[in-house]
Image 1 (cartoon, one colour):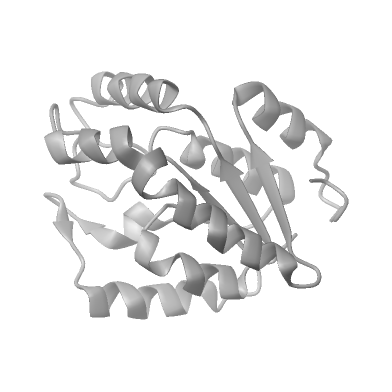
Image 2 (cartoon, helix red, strand yellow; image 1 turned 90 degrees about the horizontal axis):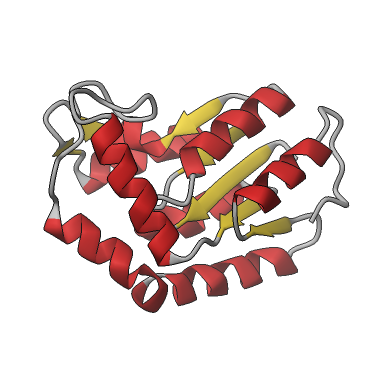
Length: 179
């Protein structure tokens, strides 16, 4: 387990989980939000982000969190492990609302500098609400194909207890039996 992609609905806990896993495995941590956004929530161009992503995935070892649907396949091509945090939308919505309140006067630690939490972003909340209907099936298909390749593993975790239990079983020595 040297190149790990962490996917899931916004609010699933991807960034927190990624920090814990990176610390446990002593691997570099890449939050894609830090590379996609510039101060004031200015998005990278597709070309810029693709070039940055090519550089990021070229490394020998990393933990990478973030959805960025258009780039999932590119990240999975280089990964050996995919962790899918599959929490219910009500849990995700609750966590995102908590995150908004917690970081309302500043930015999150996994976000680019100058990107302060927005109080109400209707499009983002709609994206979360419709994630399981619109995005989730595609992510599951990508993970099924990824898992068919030899030496790849997909870890599916459905809540904080499962996430914590799995992290507890991880050691710095790679164990390909952890699924």
